[in-house]
Image (cartoon, rainbow, N blue to C red; front, top):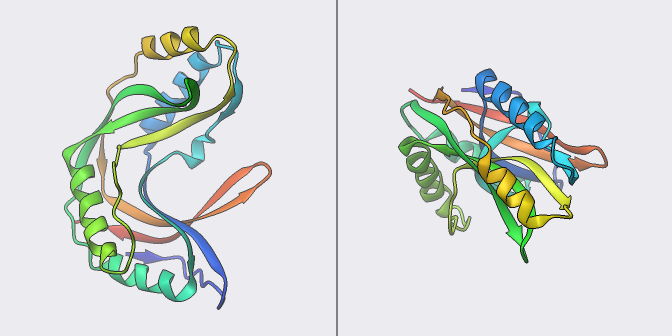
Length: 192
C-alpha cells in the first residue's frame, strides 16, 4: 500500500470515490473505439484517456475526519488479484436521449471486491450501492439528432475482449473544473 501523503485540511470536503484504473491495453482499445464513435456526429465529450477507470464506489463530498476513516478501513480490505475483461458497449439514457456511452467490464472478482468494499464502508455509514454495474464511462453525450440511428450505431460497434489483471484499487479525489475533472490518487491498495 502506497500513500501519496496528500493531507486534506480541516473543514475541507473532498469529492472521493474508489476505483480501478485501466491498463494500457484497455486505453488503446478505448482510443480505437473513440475513433469509431467520432464518425457519428454528436455533441458531447470523450473521457480523457488518462482518466479512464471503473468506479467501485462513489463516496461523495466527505470531510477530512471521514476521509481518514475511509482510508483506514480500506487498508483492512484483503483481496486476491483477479482477471477482468472488456465485454460490451452500451448507453445510459434519459427520456430516450443517450447520455453516457460505456464499456462493460466483466469478471466475478469485480463484483466480489465491490461487495467487500460496500460491506466495509456500510459500517461507517455509507449507503450500499443499489445496482452496481461494472463499467467505465467513455463518453458523455449532450445532443444527438438521430437518436435511433445513434443507438443502432453504438450497438454495432464490436470491442476486443481484452483480458487484464487487476492488482490494485484506489481511493481517488475528484476536482471539477471547466475543462473536466481532475483525478488524484489519495491512496493505493495492493491486492495479494
